[in-house]
Image (cartoon, rainbow, N blue to C red; front, side):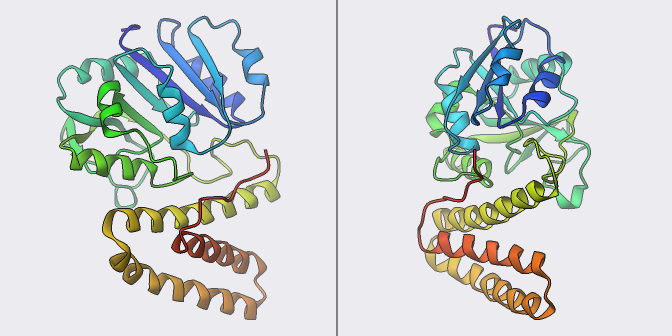
Length: 285
């Protein structure tokens, strides 16, 4: 087992979550942490773990961090997690390793998310032990290392959101399939207040929300433009552009500063992507 799979954790100011996560795994499982913030406390706290390697990099996005981790992976498979994913233990990793042997020609495998509503989150038919699905959630993705390389890894133009959707679409076009292992369930908290990035106060949570708003619409436009062409994408997004401008005017009139700023951020992200500008919005540090 220990020579076949590496667990990869992508960390950004997530020291407490990382320590909690790795304490659920035994020391015969290889773990690689990619820390893309300036937090150096994590390195000090994992010195006692002989099975863990940590690499630091500039914060160029989630997909870029996975690509960076791939450079140091020597095992046949690797399993990427966001450290805020819950219910990950030896049993889940071992069962995934067993299923990998019988699932052929896959681009990515993922567990079932047991804390989300079926209608709000795409999942495979839960009555199937192994169900085919169009895209695996980036918070828990298992890869065959050679297949990952053939597919080309993640598109590093995407900083946040749609990176896994883009990867899975490219994989499907190459003949690979994505599967969800429905007997193996995990939980993934939603929202900046519950997420992977540590926040100190409500102001930091709001700043994170704005970052997410900006990147979601930037990445969505970029994804559609990349895969469906500019003409279809413009037709699809023009109504969204009009609605966003209308809401900015509406909330300006109502003097609702928070909602006005929210839609201004969305508008800025959409226009940046439409202009072909880079995914540039970042938080300090």
